[in-house]
Amino acid sequence: MSGSRRAQRDAGLPAPAATPQPKPSPPTNPIPIPTRSVESATPAGQPASRAPRSRRRRRRRRGPSLPDRTVVFVGPMAAGKTSLGKRVARELGIPFVDSDAVIVRGHGPITAFFETHGEAEFRRIEAEVIAAELAHPGARILALGGGAVLTESTRILLRQHPVVLLTTTQEAVLRTANIARRPLLRDDPNAWGRIFEERRPLYEEVADVTYRTDRATKEQLARRVAQWARSFRKDTA
Image (cartoon, rainbow, N blue to C red; front, top):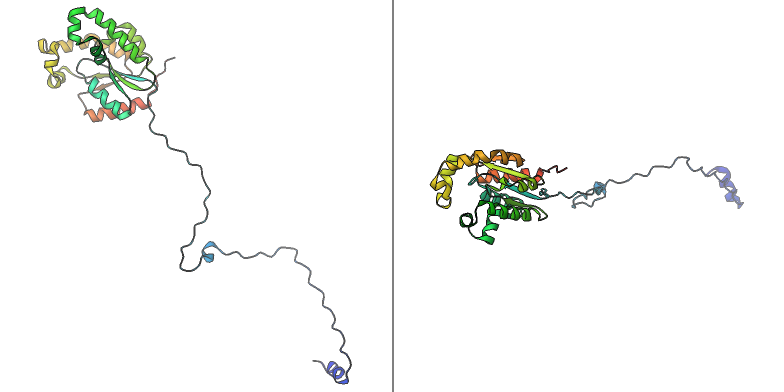
């Protein structure tokens, strides 16, 4: 305390009022306030929380696409149309139909029908059965008899569908086929090769893809044909 103030106090005189100090003006720029990081704000002994992630809309993965119509298997006798067709149908999860089996259910054994009514009548009924099966909407596998391509109306209908041609060799057929169920092969083993060569141009006319069934296992072929069927789209314009 200064001497003048002490003298005034001792004399009983009131002390002069203190001179007010000017207030500081507010800063023109805002003062930054430090923020704590997520890690520093986490209590000790607890794992640090993750920073919130921006939500992204996830696209659902679509499963493998299916054919948009019936896939048809053609080829010579004993080439594996029925056995491979069933495997491909299972691979794709779609129905399998054998046109010969449909005919047998409606008209009895094909060999007996041939003997009683002749080939011309059989081909007529066969063409009707195939047309009815092809008219079904949705994906399915349809295996045709070896001579189905002989009928022109059937070949015209096949232009609207994916067609798989299965081929093999006469040696492979005689080695693997059930001869007892194939009277033609039993009576004339060389008939298979002659008939195949006669019908080859018609098979190739309707086919979109060809597979040799004697060069791979059935499992391998089923996967290959199924993959082809998923990706193939036929231009019917």
